[in-house]
Each structure stands twice: as C-alpha cells, then as structure tokens.
Image (cartoon, rainbow, N blue to C red; front, side):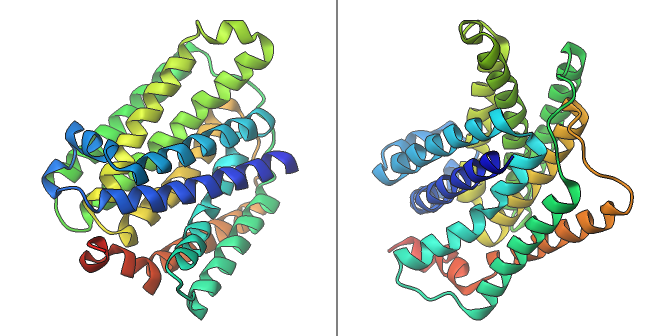
Length: 289
C-alpha cells in the first residue's frame, strides 16, 4: 500500500508539471475555439503543450503502476497533492515566494489527506465489476458529464470552467476504473489485454477527459477550474472504488474523521487556488507574457 501511495505521489507530480505547461499553452489560444476540436489542433502546434502531454503520459504510467498495487479509493485521493506541487513549480518557474497562507493551505491539504487515509484505511477490492455494472457506471458517468457540458455551453463566467473542471475530474476518475481493470487483465494474461474492451475504453475515456481538461483550462481561470478538477476526481474515485470494486472503507465513528479529512482537503484546495501566485497566472496580462 505504501508503494502504491508513493507511485501515486509521483503521478501527481507529473500531472502538476503537465497542468502548468498545458495552462500556459491554453491561454494563448483564441477564446472562440472553446469546446471545439480546433482547440486541440491549435494546441498541438505549441511545443510547450506537447511537453505537457509528455508529462501527462508519465503521470499515467505512474498512476497505472499505483493502481496495479492499490485500490482506486487510495490512489485517486493521493493525486490531490497535484495542486501543492503545481504551486511549488509555479513559484520556482517565476521566481516567486509562496506566502504564509499558501504554505498553510498546503499543510492543511496534506494533513486532510493523511487524516482521511488513516481513518478510511482503503483496502484492495473484493470483487470485479460484471458487465451490467460496467454498463450502468458508463451510462451514469456519460450522462453526468454530458449534463455538465450542456451547463458549461449555456453559461458564462465562473460556472463554465467549474462545470468543465468537474466533468474532467469525473472523466479521469472513471478512466482510473478502466486502468484498474486493464492492470488486472495484464497481470493475469498480458496477451489478452490487446483484445479486451477495457483497453480501448480506457483510451477513449482518457482522451475525452483530456479534451474536457483543456477546455476547463481554456475557458476560465485556474482559481475556478483547478479546485473543481482536484476535488471531483478523488471523491468520484472513492465512490467508484467502493461501489464498483468493493474496496473497503471504514465506517462507524471513523466517518467523522473521514469527513473532516475531506473537508480539510477541500479547504486547502480552495485556498491554494485563491493564492496570489495562481491568480497572477490566471490574469490576462500574464497570459500575454
């Protein structure tokens, strides 16, 4: 379990690097390309975005390795440390100094994660989803994401990046369930993986989630998009792990500590997203530099 957590931390670091690079490229693309494939074609011409994709692929490899050793309910919450890593990378890249409140938020988020994992003690799954469960999960997930995209398309202001951020977080959490299934197949029979539907479902879900992420970063500031993404992914991951794979989460009095841990994580994420460093990187002036 410790090895899975460490691999998840490395995945979060790679994702943070990808987030910084992709956001830098996304800010230079015309606003009218939002929610269009033209956005991706425009981004491909940016070397910085391609480096971000390379970091994202590295993060995927570490995440897959983590999921092969631990449950979704363990790995996805650990990925929340992506935001502190993002803050530290931004401070190094721009020679900025993190203020006291930002460091307090990082400590709060980290403490919340530790409290949640200690209280929940997520374990390995007790079963694998059958065909009916996969169909239900896919329909519910796709329907929820579609509804969020409709909301994003019909609104402006902070609601747009928030809705797209939640949609991307939900998509990445569902992708994690498919990664988990693929690692299980590969461990039992590597040759069967290439002819199994979870592999291609994982690729499709990952690409759709990446498209939603680019639009979330393109449509608004990190102050809104990042918390929506960072919070929705682990919460959805916990639900997928418990409901689809039977990953045990301690109940009873432990629920109080679990809720407290999640609350501290949410508070830390929101405070980090409101930090002066993040806001400066979200401003139009910084986008032209």
